[in-house]
Length: 281
Image 1 (cartoon, helix red, strand yellow):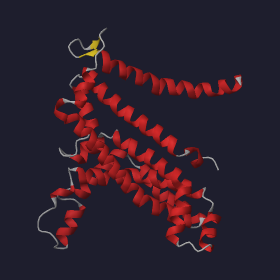
Image 2 (tube, helix red, strand yellow):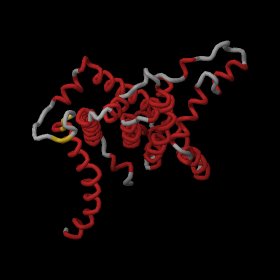
Image 3 (tube, rainbow, N blue to C red):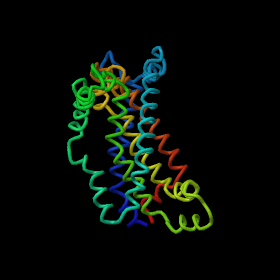
Image 4 (cartoon, rainbow, N blue to C red):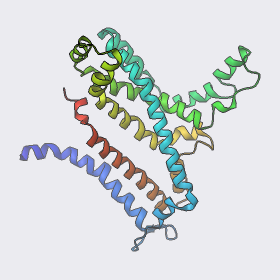
């Protein structure tokens, strides 16, 4: 037992230093920071949290909008990523290596460059509008393609779909395919075999995809800043604005609300499915 505890000490230290300590500091700033004094005071207050959930509903509205956009982007990643992951898992080992390389290839370039590339694709003089004009489909550029929620979701899906594909693929690789053949032999249709055999076995990969996609999108700042425009402002944009305005207490309150929501989501997912099945055969 002592050797086990010593073995867990490095992981526990990382958790405490990188997660617990920042959360405690964030909570202290949200409850005791004074914007007038620009420092911590001895007086506890929940005024910053009240402001998050009041302020004429502005911050709460942006928080809900952020969650909805993250849900839509996550659903799109799952709808596109699951069939592609299934296709990869169904091919030969040689082709699996090729296709997986294509999936991870975007990671070889800068995240910022990939986001900027979409401004060249969706902009008024971007690739799509130029192609439509060349084909004489439109006379004027389609301005709705960029600097709005639509472009934000498109870029989110592009950025995070590899995570969904890889997580679902890992789950498909551990699936017992003999059960699928048995279901087909017993008269199940392909749809029934998928819904009753394949999907239940790959739920850990689906839930892992939600974790890898939904949670990072909640904390996205660069993408909404570059392609979201005014209508695509997310809660992290407001958080950064508060920090720039030296409203550290209010910014910490916003960050703590987001972190609490993420923690509750993770605990809910942990109770719903055993994610260890994704990594343990």
